[in-house]
Amino acid sequence: MGSIVVVGGGLAGLVCAARLVHAGHDVELFEAAPSVGGRLCPIETEHGLLEPAVGEIGWGDANLRALVAALGLESGGDTFLERKHGLVLGGRLHRPPHLRPREFLFPSLSPRMDRPIDAVFRRPPRWRDRRPLVHAVWDSLRQSSLEPPAAVRALDDVPWQRASIRAFGTRFCTTRLAPALLARTGVDLSAESASIVVPMLARLLSGKGRSVPLAGGLVHLVDTLAELTRIRVGTKVEQLEATTEGVRIRYRSGGRAGQALADAAVIALPPSEILRICPKLSPVERGHFESIEPRRSIVIHRRVTEDAWLLRGVAGVTFVPGELPDMRDLRVLGPPAEPYASDPFWIRISLNVASVDDHWHMSDRDLIQKIDGTFRGSPLGTLPDGPTRVERLSEIISVQGRGALSRRDRFLARTERSPRLAFATSALATPDLEGRVTAGMRAAAETVDELYRIQAVTEGVSNVMPDVVSDAAPANRVG
Image (cartoon, rainbow, N blue to C red):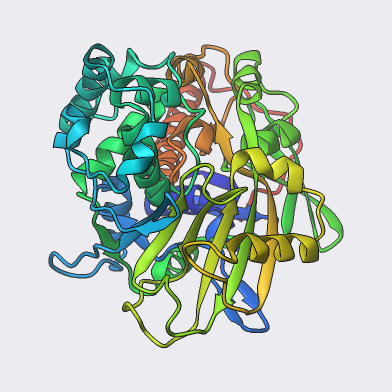
């Protein structure tokens, strides 16, 4: 059994800590915020609890579903949801059906929600470009290991936006593919490598658009994981140094500086934070995290109390580029609710990537007025009045971009690595909930392997040189 510190209390860090505790290790989690959960953490407001996440998970997210089932949070039997996600196109609100596999072979069979607008989508699909992409999706659906299939690796150096438009045409990508992925992941994937998006697309297709309801939503998942681990909230790690003897951690908590020494550490933070607290990473490690592009976001939360508002009955709405200026999508937040229920709920409005920088320094009041003016006269109608909260997220997603798998392989196969360190970050997985859970699981397994390796080496040295005694000063271990 070893002492392990997990830095970062998001979903990946909580999953990693829980698995390490289950393996019998002494684990403590450091979280800088007042509570754990990261972007899933509920926000206390004077108007009630705001849950910034959607309270359901994808049917095809195998690791996430296994985690939820192991914690007893998944509904029994084959209970699932089929909530609609709308699309604003041609000045109208559409409710398209879920993606069907045959549409990838024959994009022309996809439903034409607004025929006059088809003239705008000039690039037709091409079979020679579609064939490798369909092959990669098919192999991802059939794979039984974590290793990406060869067909997926072949797409690593191609941006997803370019690959998808060439393969399926502008109309299908704009009205079917991009909205479906955005509805499932909540992030814009246009700049990602095609090899990163294909596994997420395969999970979406395997789940047939269905979602699994959670008892208490994702917030309850976070609370359940947090109960399994010792946690220090309000503890910001300022520096972390990994040596062959242990990991030294300098932190600040409650205005006071402190230090800890652990056998190993797992860093579950965005790449920019990893670079901040780890000044002595190996060149390959530092180069990998520096290659990740942080992307910031602006989201507006509003509490809705009007029973008859048009959005009732759908999970959210995606705005096709050009329909509503600066708008990307709108989502209903919190645990799944019955359509047309009378209880108040929160909505989340996200700005598109190109508009974030232009509005970053705008005051909250001016931004809210502009959002209300944009929706006035739109297909959704005027937004209901209600309490509104603006959030500016400095790193909502880490864009891995072209060559992501190749860089990840070099990182995982590095011969020079920081000892006793593992990383549970989105820069090593897909940018969705399933990716965060997978990153946490992998980091836990890597940490256990590292501790066993160190123990084997230490025991081997002790057997060869039994009279060697360390003259290092004793240090307080975590826990």
